[in-house]
Length: 234
Image (tube, rainbow, N blue to C red):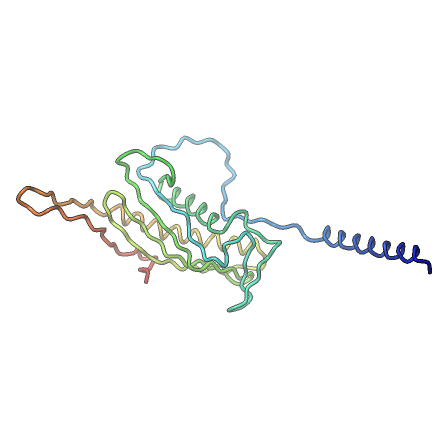
């Protein structure tokens, strides 16, 4: 066989390999994207009355191993898989925060004003959530283990609690995401109860310093008990 024919044959094999590779890429399933947000689909514009108080829901902390768009699922006690074709629409911390903000605003009739100016003298409650476990086991469970706190800006009352919510899920990723949505809803109900507890605490009155008296002591935050559906953080 001549040298020209050898090169021609080699080129044909390379071309076939390229075609096969492109075909394999084109046959890969497209990525699916999921969100913990949701809505009724009602697009009607509503006039909302001024809120009786405001929330400042800080960015949610999430374990580093699940802080990615790809879903991280548990196959056992120590083995996980990172799924390239099953993804969150945004980072899990953002998904959880957005869902919590919507839930808390609805349950409490409040407005989340984090990063937004609000009226002077308004009742404001600062909420911080630290998710310690965000576990996804398709066909088994969706689990959220979170430590959270609520602090009243005006009355300096504070509580710090822990909520662990585990939801059984069916097969498929739609069921898994629905389980996480239910877990977020349970977490939001616990936090709502915490906000109500803090809001019902009477305001503190600081001692006033006089010429003959000692300087007024700073007001220390008051630690309140957790609601019945949450436990004190350890």
